[in-house]
Image (cartoon, rainbow, N blue to C red; front, side):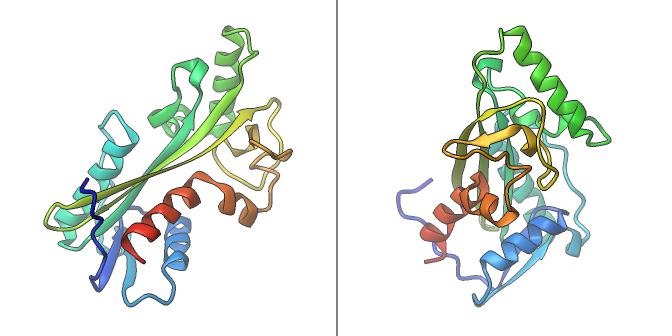
Length: 203
């Protein structure tokens, strides 16, 4: 990535995702700007298999896949829970740990059971989000956000999703599953990455 960030001046930005909630978040982030935000689903672009071995690799893969189908600049993210004592697992496999039915109760149990095999005393963890903004000519910009914290058991709260009910951000007492959704957004890994993206490419 060049030291000089490229400023976004195009008329449309495509989110490389079928997640309607994510589209709402991104559209709200860019509200009032002189371009439209659409999604891969709007263009009938199927989601690709995430075959890379890093968050950045998967974000770039999704963005390039969408550009190949639409010819328009794309934004994609890849995110997950990283537990250092588990050698970074579940990491890029965070969703896959939940299985084809996206059973995150099972996934959280798997994380907790894995921690137990290590003695269970080191429960540090962080969420990572990597955003990729890519243009049709191949230029790309990458931004990483993270939020540090620790894992609790049993899970608490039903306001979040994924691993949120077992994650407490540093300096807070509530899990992401108990926290007001807006407060979680304000301190979360995706907000951190978006803030860096906006400052660099959407000043």
